[in-house]
Length: 307
Image (tube, rainbow, N blue to C red; front, side, top):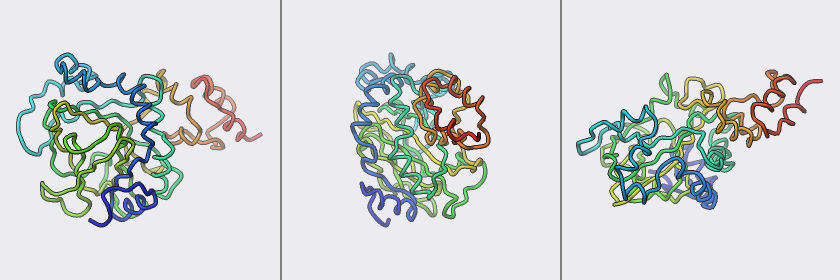
């Protein structure tokens, strides 16, 4: 491994991501921003750790969530060692999230977006994965084999510079020994099962890695432990072969409308909305946008219309 596992120097972090394939950016998002969003909104999404561990049977249905995850919650999860188990993927919650909107705003936090743009050397990016993932000690054995995320692309990944996508975990809680810091190994051939570097970091840190990086989940071993993060992943605009989460099915629902109304044109463009000046826009469409997302500042779209 060349270079440190983590760094608070954003310039250094960008070079490590581009040259080595992965990096932990220490405290990329201020702790105060994380704590504010967590206390305001996260516990409307997932159970508080103390509550969950005090009475797992009571809070397990809340943790399991919607009907798709219910089937995972019924799965038997015996066995030791590194394996993919369906219950490892419980605790996912898709954006938008209920509450004040502060958790949704972390998805487009300026520090994360600017970091991704600089890594990928483009101002025209799309957020293609955004979800919360919570884990609690005892739910299952979270230990996985080393793998690359080939389920983000319908074709083989092209790995030359400027074809990369950027996968990322924004830490909503401190992640250290006992609460499942992802094991990262790097690029090349699949590593030995015990290889790798723990991606530990304080809340607000951002683990960024390329699609050719080997990594694996590890088990939570701390009694009463938990770990919460937000997936925020980026691709170049037009790279339609890459994808994961799509906002369109929820884009007319109140939580998304509230989030969209808080966005700038550049933030909405991260989800595919045409920027002001794009030939898509007419005055009627801008007016319809203002009705759909009440409170959205539509002046940039109006000012960019051709007379």
